[in-house]
Amino acid sequence: MKGFFNRILYVDLSNQKVEIKTVDKSVYKNFLGGKGLATWLLTELNPPGVDPLSPENRLIFATGSVTGTATWGSSRYGVFTKSPLTGFYAESYSGGKVPEAIAATGFDAIVINGKSDGLTLMEITPEGAFFHDAGHLSGKDTFETESAVKTEFKDKYPKGWKTGLSVIGPAAEAEVKFAIIKNDGWRCAGRAGTGTVMGSKNLKAIVFSGNKKREVFDKKRLIQLAKEMAAEAKDHPVVQAYKSMGTSQMVKVMNNAGAFPTRYWTKGFAPHWEKISADALHSQCDVTPHACAKCYLSCGRMTKVMQGPHKGLVLEGPEYETLYTFGGLCMIEKIEEIVRLNHVCDSLGIDTITAGNLAAFAMMAHEQNKSDYPIQFGDAQAIEDLLIKIVTNEEGIGQILAQGIRHAAKVFGMEDQAIHVKGMEPAGYEPRVLKGMGLAYASSDRGACHLRATFYKPELAGMIDPKQTEGKAKLFIDFEDRLTLFDTLILCKFYRDLYPWELLGEMITAATGIDGSKENLSDIALNVAAKAREFNLREGMTQSHETLAPAFFTPLTDSGAAITKDEMDYMLKDYQKLRNWT
Image 1 (spheres, helix red, strand yellow):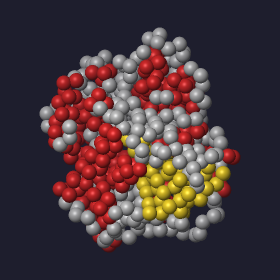
Image 2: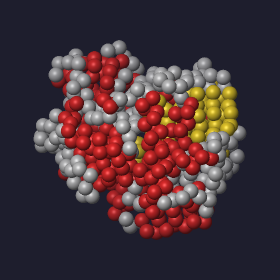
Image 3: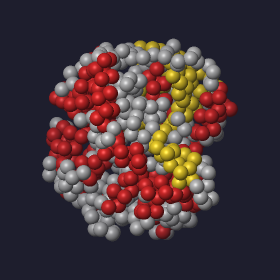
Image 4: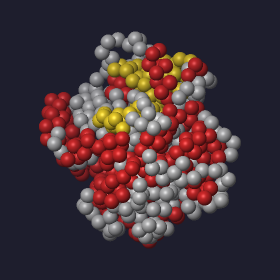
């Protein structure tokens, strides 16, 4: 089928065996690639009820039908598995340059099964997978690992081949349940513990290299669409906003809306927000816009700290989510300290959203005398020390938090205060103000997720009243379907304003030859959503998992903003009725 390589690589780490197979073309037709193909494979191949850290839990890398083409926003890959953090479906995405190297290997998906006897580096080329001892990389942080492997493979491949590398850090080796997979220095498949699964397989790094190019249905039209988009979008306000301020601009937006999660989800406004805003980042640090391949948004911020104890520190970031967790939830008031904590998380290989949420939860627990570990709001050094204890699984607080929010809440006797859905903490969008985000978190297949529909966008933009519940599910589904298709391609979500339904349909037809009508594409999106739901139901998801944590039904202490259980139940029932789901 056009747009795909029609090849899937199956890797058995336990026996170091490799097979190259294909699937029936109906799978591509009904699910497309990326999330669609990977979700189908995961559901077909994973044993029901498998322990996420068992060798039999599949870890799947996938790209989409436009990865490696001229399409803007297409340099992304996805990782799919059963989450050790939630026990349910896991998906996580990353950008940079590595996605094009994965596509150049000539596989639509790479399915990894089993567990190596010792720490292993895997090399993937168009010929298959090759295995190398990685004992010398044991315990190395993500930056050290990338540097060492790049040096080792520097001159190995022919000129013109695309080469990339994905790695884990010490957190994944220690099976901390929210470990990440990292590439290109600072790009991360960061959520739901995909890195933990990679670590459980004794897989320290994967080198991707190849020269394969996918054959699309109408290459001329696909290139023409890319040229037209670049010409039309260069002056688009969204493009200019991301290029000038990146995602850090959302600190101001969310505080103005009273929806900036603060002091562990008890407030919606941070009095110190201007100290951790985009303006603060850009005025107090040396910041340069940075882009993934095939991108003109340049949302990344190459940041160099110019003052204080962390002077000279360089990284790409911090993104809005890191600013919200450490700056809002943990009440850190210095931008340089947030940059430092971002660097610590990246080095250790842990998700900044979960890490910041857990740190703030530990602060709340100590404040209420439910934990004897001494950590207070606003103490950046104490957070750094705590993160190291988590990654080293230090007895006590380290071991408790390494298992995630549900375990910590049970130990501290704070299950009524823990903020999560299915065991995963939300991003920085307060559902007591943006009620559609409550629906987004509760209905997401991977737990509290803002990216399945990015529904904060229509609520903040005035497309629908944030307080409204009636009719919200209908608009939500329209966004969710379109952005599910983004994940099948795989496209960056920041291009959501630049790829409306019609253009998305044209692109899919040009790439694959599939009918690009909204009706057909909506059916495909529903297929993908239903398959992920099938996986979760099989793994034990019940109605109790598809709602917000009890703490969300307590009003914010500063504004009094609230969402009721009745409002959530109404939106969820409306959503499921429109989906024809029970």
